[in-house]
Image (tube, rainbow over all chains, first blue to last red; front, side, top):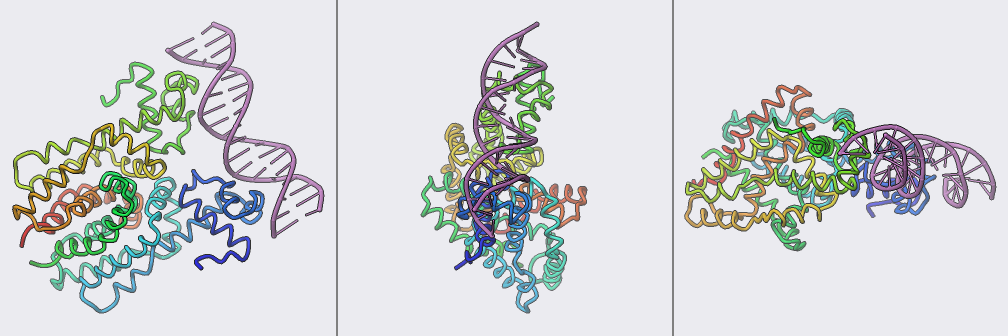
Length: 203
Length: 203
DNA sequence: GTCTATACGGCGATAGAC
DNA sequence: GTCTATCGCCGTATAGAC
């Protein structure tokens, strides 16, 4: 249902996404992608001239996925705290569905930042309107005054980092008990919201 | 001063550390390490039988570096809030000195978690005593009651994640202005401490 | 469009002289 | 211990038949 494997190109894209996300650009093997797609290596090069080109196609799709339309939430006419709650809910829902995204994106961004930058520009993503709305909430006294950039980074850190460090958490905190780890991640939505709201609410 | 390049083995270890941290296990090339050490490839294999062995040696040293003796801070007899402040100071000082650690460790942990697990066991690192001290502070009413595991993850996330995502922050938040990015990271010590303390202090 | 077979290069590892 | 030369594999990419 999440994949339409009718034609070969889609089969390739779907297989490539799975392999690249698991192994990264450097760790992935064209042979493995071909196997997963149920075809042979030569056909990969027929559809996408090179491994680089294939990876670019996948990476672009994934970046589009990871930068959802947060702008809409922020523009809705509601208390700032509600906006923050919605942002955290939206982001953690997304990450629960795609837990490998953070590790994958961090790896590739650090390997070749320029690739990421081009995509950010292409998708027209900008942080400025978000910072503006945060600042206005402070001006109205809805939340305490602090550096808005740091607030944004605080929230994103608490949302994203645990997924990138999931193997560490699973081992150090829960002794490889997968169920306990899963439960922990499901709790985080409430925990992060409560923590942030307590930190930014006046008095 | 941070390196003793008198003998060949140390030259190799120093060069390998630089290259592995920058490129990771998969991206690093034995030739590049040899160049950086001012020797040739064959000598690498003479000292360390294989690339894997050489990487293990480096990775072990780096993990030892990244898990400083936090236990000592936690055992000192002082208010819990002071302990938290010291933890954040200590960790951010460490990361400002070694900003590439988070991206490197996350990459390798996700590539081969077992390697990391062995080292955690070898270094005898355990989270239990930290959780215990946090819980006791809650029992005494020094901080509000919440899930200690989440508190630990919150704090570590805010400390570590920005370094792993440094290229993103540098581009999205500061338009590649390195000075502004550097200033932002220097501010974080105060910002994180203030944010956390506000979130956990009673009333 | 899809396959098999193969060319080509890069890289880890080894042999062997000094 | 340190070097040069080279082996052998593996992975990307291409040629060419169907």
